[in-house]
Image (cartoon, rainbow over all chains, first blue to last red; front, side):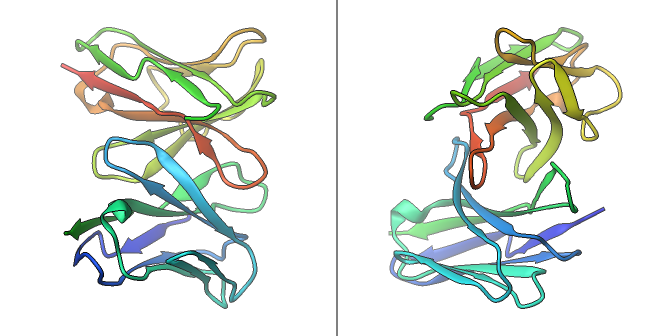
Length: 112
Length: 111
């Protein structure tokens, strides 16, 4: 079945430093979604990318979808303590599938 | 969380007891998805339901787990004879135009 892998598993950064998490799928994705989960909270939808090579920005966050639609990245510029949490990528396991397959996430810690 | 309501937030059960988790989707939505999150893991799909119908239960363990979404009332995820390995966070979600909107989850602890 489809596998979605994320690296790194953990990342500790000093406040103000940049952060990047990478997502790779074993199969081509129709789209990719990103979620953020604060400690003790629930996943919150951030964005969906659909097109090959697509780049989207949300303030300090930049999302990219690879040309082959099998990989994606999330980059945060100048991290803040409010960025703390786990970032998940997710994609559908196949055409017409209802199963959103999540990566294991990258847990971000920001040292003030 | 706006829209998707889950209860209870925390549930403690002894081994062998039954756990019932409830979920009401966003207003106007008649479908729910259930996902399980083990500690330090991503979310795993369990089941997709619409009212009075199971659409996809391919992620449900074969034994002890069942789900329903009756015509009236919330969706119920039922775990019979719980074991320690069932300890996890269980989330349900609605799917508006883009992405999922998750509920706050039920943290199940089996002692």
